[in-house]
Length: 65
Image (cartoon, rainbow, N blue to C red; front, top):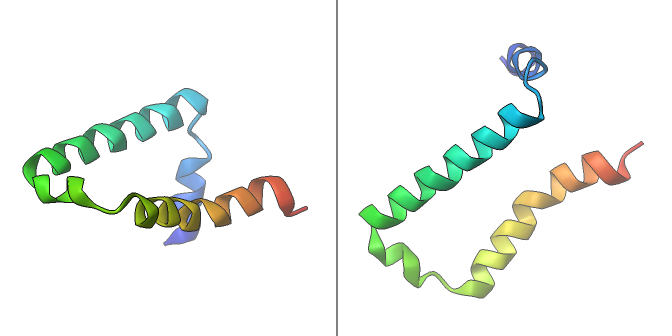
């Protein structure tokens, strides 16, 4: 399954990936509007989650040779 998805993703260019990121941003805004309690999440927890999610891609792009 992942091999199939990797082959499909190779067809995307920078603009396509940017558009996917923007669609995720807008979908997230929509979810927050539906569930306003999500706005009360602790900023420190949010920063930790962002760093944890970004660690592997950062490593694969900039550190791994």
